[in-house]
Amino acid sequence: MDNGNLTSVNPYEFAAALGIQIKDRLLISRALTHRSYLNEHPEALEDNERLEFLGDAVLDFVVGAWLYNRFPEMAEGDLTRMRSALVYTEQLANFARKIDLGSALRLGRGETIGGGRDRSVLLCDAFEAFIGAIYLDGGIDAVVRFISPFLEESSEDILVNHRNEDPKSKFQEWAQAHGYTTPRYVTRNVSGPDHSRLFSVDVLVDDIVYGSGSGTSKQSATKSAAADALQKLGETGNWEKQ
Image (cartoon, rainbow, N blue to C red):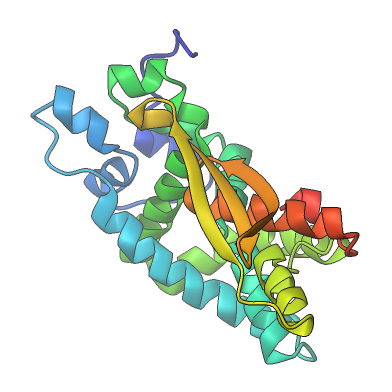
């Protein structure tokens, strides 16, 4: 629980410190405004959810183009898996942590006290919104300049640690190769307050539980369950990195 730091740094100053010259100050403020802030500050006009939608699409394109040029010999399937690893919730949250984006978020008091400034799902969404703001203000070239150093560093780590090998896809391949039905993911439990959910998931094949996992989103929980199943089966891969 974060009982301190109830105020955020100035969004425009935050962007400037990163070397991003945002012309539209309202745009960058909106990118860093969580919906919980609007509930307590009616003078704030809009949260970052629309910018998050835009930033998600921009990231898919920019990361895809970057990978296409960076790895000219890489096959289409491998490029797809690499892009998925680079725009995965936890990866984008880690990008946000590298620039201390949480310190600039405008959050409601309850979200702040509940640790929202370091919650992966919230950071991922805010990072996407931040990308959306950079795109609207400076275009694709501005996004490429900002994101390329993150992609260069992280792509090497992903390849070295095999994090482009999606455990859900690998477990499905294993099931099909052995003549079993497609794995089924069942949410066993959802706990925690609204601002900090924890999902617990089992993965079943032919009604037999092969693995279990948990995460702050259903996506991460299902990946964790698949990784657990693969480890129990003795399949190779650095699955704990997922």
